[in-house]
Amino acid sequence: MLAPRSNESSIISVKVSGRKSAGLPVYKRSLKAFHARKKSIDLAIRSRAKCISLMQALATRENPPIERLKITAIGTTLRTKMEQTGKRLSCFAQALNIPFSFNTIMPAFKTRFKKQQFCRNWLHSGIKMQAKITVTETWLRKHRHLYDGATRHPFIRSIRDGNIDISAFKTWLGQDYIFVRAFVPFVASVLTKAYKGSDDGNGDVEVILGGVAALHDEISWFKKEAFKWGVQLSDIVPQKANQEYCRFLESLISPEVEYTVAAVAFWAIETIYQESFAHCLEDDSKTPPELKETCQRWGNESFGEYCNSLRNIVDRQLEKGSDDVITKAEATLLRVLEHEVDFWNMSHGRT
Ligand SMILES: Cc1ncc(CNC=O)c(N)n1
Figure 1 (cartoon, rainbow, N blue to C red):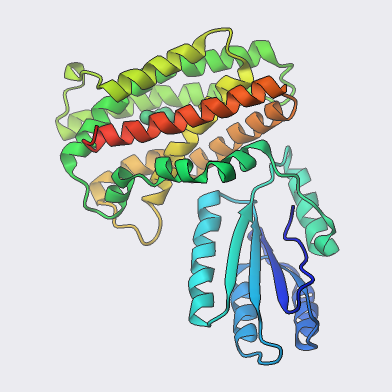
Figure 2 (figure 1 turned 60 degrees about the vertical axis):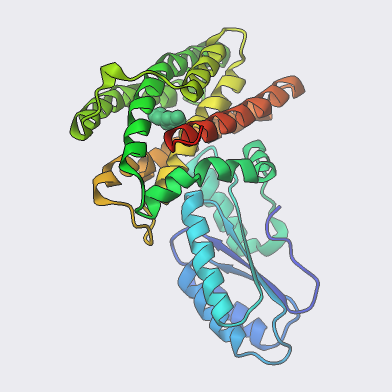
């Protein structure tokens, strides 16, 4: 559900969406209501700047004092970006002594039109709109702890903080090359399942084909990068965690594994790298310059959009999946998360 309107006194819900700013009149009207000491108001604010001026206004208000400011950002952009915004706003609220909470929701939209329609309705109709929470959203909330373990691993943190041990990086590079080679037939099998398993009016095959194509370039990149760091790829022996992960991928190639289940694994595998490496590129990161290109490879925005397309595919499939398939798919997600954590541990030399 979208930022539920609270009936408690002085609780203000603010909704943030999109990059473009809402018409100023909406904002002015809301502020007027606020100055008139209405007990509860609901603002549709579409930019961080406006949130900040609102907070400044709230901080100087004495009667009645603000009890809590709740901001819900609706997902029209990348999760990591929204969370960054949340962090900044939270710091600001703290400085102003305003009790503050922030949360994000990311409803999936099938088309750009649907998204625009949603945002427009949302701005104008206040709280009446409800966004349906997707299955992936539910899972990520439920397994937040494990998910964060995979995307904010000490290995990733050490890149981000600029104190990574270069030998650990080289280990990761060599092992990941082997992983990516095993990933290719897996992705090809997802492509086959997409072709066979659905009527594909939604263009799943094309999205997945884009993934296959990118892997070709990725393998060349690994070779080039290995040469740069003096890593001899032909000598690499896959370590235990890597072997187990590759074996897991192979098990998913089987035709008995449903398209939905395999697609969930595919989405999760790509997204974990996207979120992990995007974290190393945030403004306040101290990632060493020589590792920036690696982080860019998975942390860039267009890879992020590709991950979102995969997520939409997965949510659409899950929406019509049987209970049995949904249960299997969730278990598969958990196994991917565990394998990813083990993979980072192995790279970090903590097996
Ligand atoms: C262990 C692991 N997980 C995910 C990825 C990202 N997908 C393809 O490159 C990767 N390269 N390695």
